[in-house]
Amino acid sequence: MSRVARSLAFAAANVFHPRMLWLMLWPVLIAVGIWGTVALVFWAQIALWLAGVLSAWLAKATFFVHWDAGDVALVAAKILILLTLVPLIQLTALLILGTFGMPAMVEHVAARRFPGLARRRGGSFAGSVWNSLVALAGLLLLAIVSLPFWIFPPLWPVIPLAVMGWVNQRVLRYDALTEHADAHEMGTIFASRRGTLYLLGLVLALVAYVPLVGFFAPVLFGLAFIHYLLAALRDLREAPIEASMVRD
Image 1 (cartoon, rainbow, N blue to C red):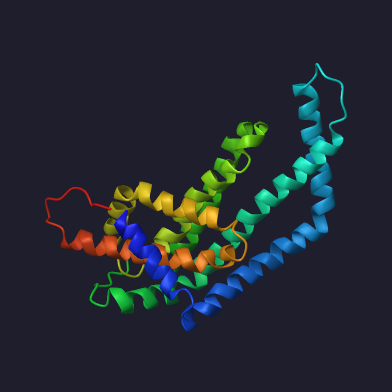
Image 2 (cartoon, rainbow, N blue to C red):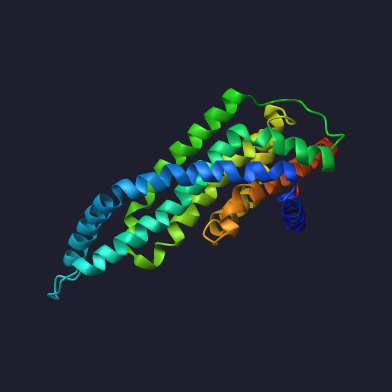
């Protein structure tokens, strides 16, 4: 965990570097523009439809009590929309950043902390696009699997965090190593660091909800993922050949 803390500290110290400031702004602004427009245009229709679904469910769940669930369902529908809107904005910003901004971020981290790390270029732009598509497919699958749990209101804040934790690490990990690692090294690191990568993705999902701080989250955690994974790659190459695991 000390490696994770050092990576987060490095990211926090570098997030306001002039090279990072523009990367911090434009992906989030585009994402906010896209989903803000969708929300403005379709807010009423989505809220009313979702309120109808929730109202029908509440009526069935509390059949033994006669009451009007319409107002409660409408408030709950608006809360659900807001809970969903934040991760959608964050994911869109991450996908834009991963495709167009990560190379510059990798150069920034590598030049400062890993200048001697050999570049084996095991990834590609096509691989990055495919990785993003897999992340989106995983998001849809996890969203479908999690549907039964949405009937429990206490789980509403937890479900998006759990889903986005996986999606975040899936989006960022490939682009963090594509320049320096070969395909075998990527597979080894992703397998051995699965838990820690998910934890970083989960923290990113949580920070996205923090006012103002969430605005910087994609670049902050992009830098943290790069630093952490390049350090893991260096450790892997320096480890004895017979070592079968890479420590966090």
